[in-house]
Image (cartoon, rainbow, N blue to C red):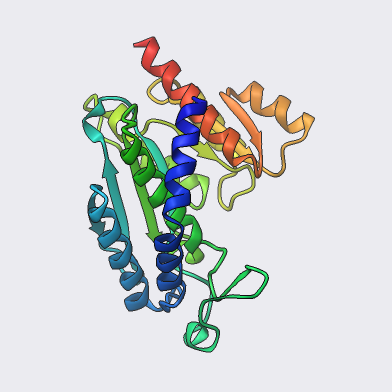
Length: 258
């Protein structure tokens, strides 16, 4: 595994300039949540880069919001996919990119609207898959879902919407294809993560789906409650690196149980 990590590091080190240029292009593209044309322009930039990297893409049209971008890589693997999620819109008002365009100061710090949330995350997600492809890693398929309306409460921003979407899935034996793993926060509007966990784990159709509670609110008391409700794992934000390892472990466990 260390050899793979080193190969990825070497690839990323060699791609710093194109990553920086893509970051700059995204930050300088106006994409406030209500600037639908700009959000879709960001979507087009990312779609261009994905397809150049061998990632199959499609967009889902959203009413009164930017489109959703879906990317799929290595889907012939046969295993449950890893999911990379993000959003393409920002909270900034129209004109922010023109007033404060992307720049890197003398100390190496980047500035500009959306320079941290979450345009660099989109660049990193794209380039980690490019790195995996470059070193020949094909263990799992990877799916991207990039929303265009995260700042306006997009799909699955609360537990109730996720539960309703789960319940509406067709009962035709394709559940594993549609849902490989659930990650939930605790504090959410309409239905919190603990209630969602109970509903999922009490339901005979959904109870085998791995479920991770990922929240900054996890205390010992919360951990006990989550365990009682059936959560497969509970992690405290911002343990992103550990989250990926846990996801991989749970998906592998499901695969071996078949």
